[in-house]
Image: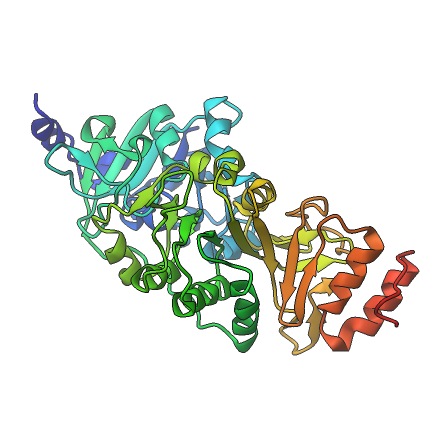
Amino acid sequence: MNWKEDYESKFKSADEAVAVVKDGDHVAYGEFAMASPYLDAAFAKRVPALRDIILRSTTCPFPPQAVLADPGMEHLMYNDWHFSPASRKLCDRGLCRYIPMNYHQGPETIRRGLIHAIDVLMIMVSPPDQDGFVSLGTSSSIVPTYLEKAGYVIAEVNSSVPRTFCDEKSKVHVSQIDCFVQGPNLPIIEAPTPPPTKVDEKIAEMVVGLIGDRACVQLGIGAMPNAVGQLIARAGLKDLGVHTEMLCDAYVAMAEAGCITGKYKTTDPGRIVYTFAMGTKKLYDFLDGNPECMLAPVDYTNDPYIIAKNDNMVCLNNAIEVDLYGQVASETSGPRQISGTGGQLDFITAAAHSKNGKGLICLSSTFTDHNGALHSRIVPFLEPGQIVTVPRSYTPLVITEFGIADLRAKTTWERAEELISIAHPDFREELIHQAESQGLRIRRIRE
């Protein structure tokens, strides 16, 4: 049987395909924009007839109907490797649980059997090419390892999925998939970035001042990293490389401005390397058939050893709070899970080991709560329940709209002084008082 005959013989309806799920199964969805709402809807109809199901995703961009079909969690438990806004809202309702992990370690936890193998994997792919290979589209991440270990693989075929250039591990042949379902070919989910604020733009200006020609750049998630990318595109920086976890629209602007050549990268010279992409149709169209962009599994893109091989790595990430000791909280607000560790520690660690590398933690100096009260993001200490994403021993440069605090090789009192100097002026006096009450000597600021 040739691959075309094999492919045609594997088609079923969505309802027929998900009928393979049985009591006690561990089920995984495709990741990010490659999660299939079509297969999820079919699976949701089965959930009330099943028991002891564990569902796993990575940043599913929509609330799975399979989860909503069981609000009492009598049939299914839902776990997410990294929270999307949809996962966060489900968690607030007690319907989603977080899996703590440094992102690059995800595939290895599966290979070692530290986490239960997947019985049924449901993904979304492109139609096959002339050689019988489908594309994983905008996300490789942990899926190649799932494909190695999953008991049964169901794939929705969607002609809207971009055919992305990828490494060998992310190539998927129709023979690796047990069942195909023809979906409605809806456009894949977009994630437009909100416009940057004036604070975002001010921080972006400082960040761009730290990036030189030939740097290799990683931008995190959110409006401010996107603002950095847009500013890079206008700043005339030359011969930049890209080795990142997430690819967003800002990289398209950088590429179109001629800033990215990748000529001086040690790993994958000339290529933009990423493990998932989330953005608008413009980004997805940029990726479609583009050999300059290489999709790869997360245990490659986020491995600190591999990242650090590139000189001049500039790794930029957001945070929720930083305390006066330099501990960075980026994933929770108190005990409330907001996002996840993701690749933040992976890239901050890599920047520390890259020749002339820079790790940047960027955040606005304040936030306003739902009652309209202003709060400092530079805090005396993290509140109970707050999770440390980057330990103080690895925290590098912290940037707010009021400046740059370089914490590398600083004493505890020097760190406190640096951080207070970039806090909002309205909170500095109280932070000085709190620092001194904690035994941190504050000298230069008072002078």
